[in-house]
Structure formats: C-alpha cells, structure tokens
Length: 235
Image (cartoon, helix red, strand yellow):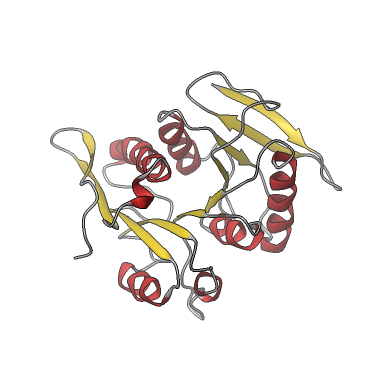
C-alpha cells in the first residue's frame, strides 16, 4: 500500500510517498528507511519503483521523497523530511540512489546507524568521491548495491575504498547492470530491481549482524528469474 503526503518546506512542499506491504499512514507508520532518487530521476523512475516494491514486499516501510538536481538543496530537503519523521521516532536508516546516496550521507542525523547506497557515484572523470565515505563513523553499517557495468562505480575501486572505510560495509553486485540498474535483456530489469529491494530489506532486518559481507544478483535468462547468491565471505 502507498500513501502520498507533503512535508512543509520554504519554497514548496516536498512530495513524499510512504510504501509498505500492509496498511500505512503518514501519521502513525514509522518508516524503516528514508530514501531518495538520483539527480535526473523521479519517484516514478524504474530504478526507484522496482527497488521500493521489492523492499516493501518484506513488510518494512520505506519513505521516498522527490527532490531536485542540486546536491546541497537535496541535502536540505532530506533533513526536512528526517525532521518531520523524528516527531514520531528517531530516524536510524537513510539511503538513496546515485546522487541521492551522497545526499543521504550528508543529511544523516547523528544517530544514524544504517546507510543504503544504491549505484553510489564513486568516480567521475576528474575525481573519486570517497571523502564522505571515509568520514563515516566506525559504528555505521553501510550496504552498497552496484552493477558491475556501472561506469560511475568500478567494483575494484569500490572494494579499495571499502578497505579504507572505518565502518563495516556490505556489497551486492548486480551482474550486467549499468548505473541506471538496467540489465540485458530488458525483461530482466524489473525482476532484478525487485530483488535488490528484497535483499536490502533482509539486510536491515538482521543480516547486517552477519560476518558474510558480499553477495550477487543476476538475471537467469533461461529460467526467466532474478537470482540471489546469498551472502558469502569476501572472495
């Protein structure tokens, strides 16, 4: 079920959508994760819609909000959404896709324990965006979900950054997926997207206490299904 509502903001209200498998209310349902889209995306983009549907199928609640393309503005909006929810419960899990993942880190309140970083834009032609990752506290738990065809996040470079981070990290590699979490053939894109949401929800529900820190999602074209390897040790 989904419920749409607005969070008050100086220029114009922030459009929010709260989603869960059961009944939800913007007044009484505390989100398990606050999440936002990438720079050029919307709440209706396939990458967000598929992830949210898969995540919510676990029974957890996810709150997504619509932002603009400016990082600092998105951070301010993220903080406003967090503040609106902290009237009910302390926010401990934040996340986002691409630029939204960067905004989540920058906006996270002091008590944040879990970070969900989908298609984190680690590198550009001119820089590696690892500074905010390296500044995360030792107590944090971070899950990265990236395609091995993502030109903005080479898996080997991500692994090198993970080794330097103070906190515990987990990594899910989506076989063949690009930065938009699209796979070939296109028929696999939605099932794979759903699976990423399911896996992240499972991580929040307890796998973040496990010693196994890596896993893989792939589209099995012959069986016409997305498959999850399960968690395993680093290779």
